[in-house]
Amino acid sequence: MRAGGISEEVLRSSLDALASGDAAIGAALSHAGYPPPRYNDPGYVTLLRTIVGQQVSLPSARAIWSKLEAALGAVADPATLTAASEEALRGAGLSRQKISYARSLADEVSSGRLNLEQLPEDDEAAIAELVRIKGIGRWSAEIYLLFAEGRQDIWPAGDLAVQIAMGRILDLADKPSERQLRELAEPWRPHRGPLAIFAWHFYKTPVL
Image (cartoon, rainbow, N blue to C red):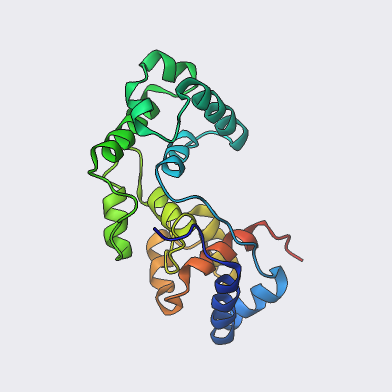
């Protein structure tokens, strides 16, 4: 399995390559500087955390996760979630929908139908494998592959912050749609993952 996340060295070299060929990206990089790398551990626990954190604030997600760890004990073992009662999971703060999603993930992993150590090398094939799981959409799959597997050309064009940031970087009149942003990003292959990380960084950088 790949080490989690894109290294700082690769992040910087990819952004330098993009900046040398695109004046708008170069100007944005000069303004905001390089983003820090971000790493998540590859595997079941990170995907389960993704489900737990959906549609809640970060502090709420952390609180629910702590309760879930207390309820399950060996949270890294999907069998513990499969065996847990709905009452226990609801007591940890999971909604009925999230319980369904979490059980789907645990069942896929424990049965061997989903092998997170051997996802397809092709990015689109890997995304298709992950979105089979209830509660894991394309965005969640892309974020997992980017931050937990360090795949360098993942492009989460459906992310609102990426859309807003790239609209600003490219000085577009309106925020680009997901489809527009995928089309715009074709010349940025194979560095789209580092550019997405930079876009989140740029989104948080004050405008002068």
